[in-house]
Each structure stands twice: as structure tokens, then as C-alpha cells.
Amino acid sequence: MVTNSIYGFDALDDICLSIKAKDYNDAKTKLQKLKDSELKLSLSFLLKSLDRESIENFQKIDISIELEKKVQLLNYLVLGYQYSLGDKQSSIDAYKNFIKAYKISDKIENKNLKKISLIALLDLFKREIFIGGKQYKPYLDEFENLKSDLTDEALYTMYQIIFYSKADENLNVNYNYYTSIKNLDSIFEILPKNHQLQTYYLYEKGIEHKIKDNYQLSENFFLKADSACLNMKHLKSLKSTIAWQLSDLNLNAKNIIKAREYLDKSISLTTSIKDNYYNSWLYAEIYDKENKFDFAYNCIKESIDIEYTLGSKNNTLESSILSVQNQTDKLKLDNLKSESRRKQNQNIAVGLAGSLALGSIIAFLLFKNTKRKQKLAEQQKELETQKLATVLKEQELTSIDAMIEGQEKERQRIANDLHDDLGGLMATVKLHFNALKEKQSPELYDKTNELIDEAYDKVRTVAHAKNSGVIAKQGLLKAVNEMADKISASNKITINVVDHGLENRLENSLELTLFRIIQELITNTIKHAEATEVTIHITNHEDSLNLMVEDNGKGFNPSQITKTNKGMGISSIDKRVEHLNGTLTIESEKNQGTTIIIDIPI
Image (tube, rainbow, N blue to C red; front, side):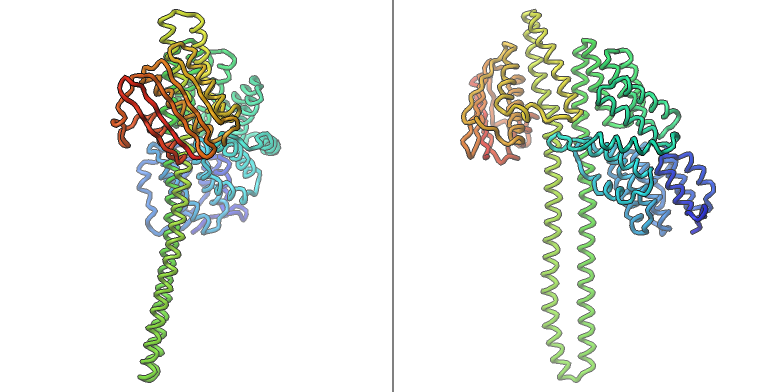
């Protein structure tokens, strides 16, 4: 393959440097000087994909024929970007093609091609992983090992800020954000002002000053970043995010008109489900400031629905990654089996050759000896195969356990915090509104308005992932009592809390799960039971904890609830209790109220 050099430097490597710096116009200029036709065609397709241009019939790119490895790598990147950024989006197919490109780059030991393959993978994770998720880590670590210039340092530091500032499973952020920002400042003091990564740097500075509540400086940086995005198709997504940030800043400044204008602009540029989530809850805040509570509630509900979709999408992508890893392990096992069979056949051939060379008596003895050795070898091979299969099975079980644990944490972190917490609060708001309609009470109206404000604060708190809620600070008992007081204030239902043995705090994650269970039970009671009184019993028996919720509502027939026919609330509670190795018992009769008993070992 002919890849002409520029002053001794491979032209392909030189183009990779421009791609890494996201300077696609410069890469296109350098491409014209490239003489190799196959390489030139693949690179032109890659640059079109990076610049958000759809390639007609891109699925017909032939990667099955024997191609030069660099061309094959570039074709996999083209397919990956078309699935990631094109019209037919599929994060799973994008990941599979990017990982193939990365493996080829590792095999041919080309650092610059490996870097742009890693950037493809990291950018995919940046777009798709909403919260938590550690699948990016080995690729980010590999990129750190390959750093060789200031552009690498800038990219790595920005990836650190994006990935490491995400909350962990307890919604905590254990990362020194300001240290990375200082590193970024020192890097961009040296880089040219026209460097393509300057746009991303200006955006990060806007975020920094927003966190510090320097709203005017923050807005200035966002406007500079927006101006730098002008006429650049590949920065459409960033331009949408900048418009959203400007909308949020204007909302904080109570400039509702400008906030709405910027948010409409963000929506017009939105290309991802994740962006739709943020747009929905920001619109909810705008409607709240305009006292349009019905519209605000609908926007909150829409954002919750999108949140479930995001959780499912992330779990699907992470499951696909685990599947690819397991397939690689199985291939290794098959290779080991083939090698074992080859060596066995070789030993048999040697034995037979020796037998033929010697006399008939010696041949007979050697034949018997060979048979005995063959049997031993087969037994040894079978034992080794069983060991290998056991190791693989353990690997698969570990991967499955990790996936299930990740999915459970995803549900606890997102579905519980948004659906259960907000759902219970909005059910209480509904009670207040009903009472307001009946009594025409200004005091009750003010209380209701406060609850609505609290709902938006909760959504905002969870979205920014800054804390793990009331449980971590106050404990289970105080949180349950506060919830009971808020709901009872509506005068539509009275909630009593009876506790025993809760002088000491339980483990934080257990308290959080128990609180969510109680929230869901109370929400179900408010929605369906038509009860006027509820009693919550919480008893600590040292080695077990008993939770009992009684109401005087209309009751129902528990036999109608099956494993295949459960409401969202009962199903969610049952899964949580099962995850804690506990038991759930429902006692209810029509017009006789309902008692739900939960026993959990501690």
C-alpha cells in the first residue's frame, strides 16, 4: 500500500492528528494529497460521517473481503459512526464496529489509529451512558497510556471531567473537578486560539462558572462557545446543549421570555433522547414560574417516561458489551480445545510410527502402552476441558451478576428517585388540590404551591446527581415521619407512625430501600384505597426488621394479584423485597381495609 509521507511522517498519521483534534476541514485538505485510492475512499467516508453527513447505502461497505488492515479498520469506524450519528441510529451496532476497529489498531500497533478508535468508543459512551456505568474505564485508561501531545492531554482531561463527575451508585461524586479545570486552563493557554477543541473548552468554562454561581461570566462563556459553533454541522449537539444552559441561566435570572427562546432553540437542535429528558424538565420549571401547573405536571411526567427509556437503553448497551466480552472468552476456550486435540493426535502418530519400526512383540507392547497413555490423555484432556468450562461458567455468572446488579442499581437510582419519590409527592399534591377545590382555602393553596416547588427541586436535585436524598442525612424514621406529616396536612388522610427498636441507624442503602417501599405503599393507598387513616408499624427485632402498613380503605382481593399481573407499585415493591431476601404478605378484604406485612433479615 502506498501512503505517501510528509517530511518522513506518514500522511495517514498526519490526517489522524487532524481527526483527533476534530479539525475535519484540515483533514479533508490533507486527504487530497493522499495517493492510495482505497485508503483515500475510506478516509473520505469517515470524514463525511464525522461531519454528520449520511453516506448512501453505507451498510454495503464491504468488510468481508480481504482488505489491507488499515482500510478495514477505517471501514469499521465508518460503519460505527453511521450507526452512532447517522439516520439509522443503533448504539449496540456502533459499539460492535468501533470495538472491531480498536482490536485491529491494537494488532497492527498503530498508535494514531488506536487513538481515533478509542475516541470513537469514548464519545459513544459520553452520548449514551446517562448516569453511573463504568464500561468506559478500560478505554479511558488506555487513552491515558497513549497520550503524547497537548491535544491528547486536552481530550483526556475533558473525558475525565465528563465521566468522573458522574454520580456513583449512591449518587455521590468522588472527584476533584476543580483540579481538572485548572489542568484544562494550563493546556489551553498553550494551544492555539483557533484550535477546534477551544469550543469544548469554552463550554466547560461556562459550566465551571455556573457551578460557582457566577452567572454573568457563565453566560459570556456559553455565548462565546455558541459563536464558535457557527456553521459547523458536527457541533450541532453541542450547540443544542449550550442553548439549554443559556435557557437555564435566564430562568434563574427570572427572564422567562429569553429562557423560553433559548429552550425552543435547544429543542430544534436536539438529536438525542437524553437531551429530550433535560428539555422536558426545564420546560416544567418554566411553566411553574408562569403558574401553568397542569402543563408543568405534564412535562414532569414526560421527563419521567423518558428517564425509563434512558435506563433501558443504557442497560441494553452495557448488556451488549458484556455479551461481546463473553463471546471472546468462548473463542479462547474453543482454541484451547483445538490445541489439545492437535497435540493428542500428534502423540498418537508418534506412537504408531515407533510401533511400526520395532518388532511385532515390541509393537504389541507399545500399542497397549499407547492405548493406556491415550486413555490417560483423554481423561486429562476431559479434566482440563471441565476446568476451562468451569472457569468460563464462573466468568459468565460473574458478568450476569454484575449486569443484574447494575440494572438493580439503575432502577434504585433513577426509577426510585424519580418515579417513586416524585410520584408520592404528586399524589399528595393531588390531595391538596382536591381539598382546595372543596374548601377554597388560601392557606391550603399556599401549602400546595410549596409542594409543587418541592417536586421541581427534587427533579432538579436528582438530575444533577448532587446528593442521595433525605435518608442519608436524617435517617429512616425521621424521613417517614416527615412524609407522614406532609401528607396528613391535607386533612384528607391521617398517617400515624409507630416504631420500636429504631434508636440506632440501619445501613444507609437498606434505609433508602425501606423508605422507597413505604413511599410506594402510601402512594398506592392514596391512589386506590380511599382510606382516611393509615398506620405504619416499623419494628427492629435485631436480626430482622418488620414493616406493617394498615389502612381502613375499601380493600381488594389479593388473589387477583399474580406474578404476571401486578401493578407498577406492587411489582416494584415485590422486587425490592426479593432483592433484600425478604417476604411480602398482603391481607385484604373488600370494605375491610388492607394490611401489608414485610419481613426483612438484617
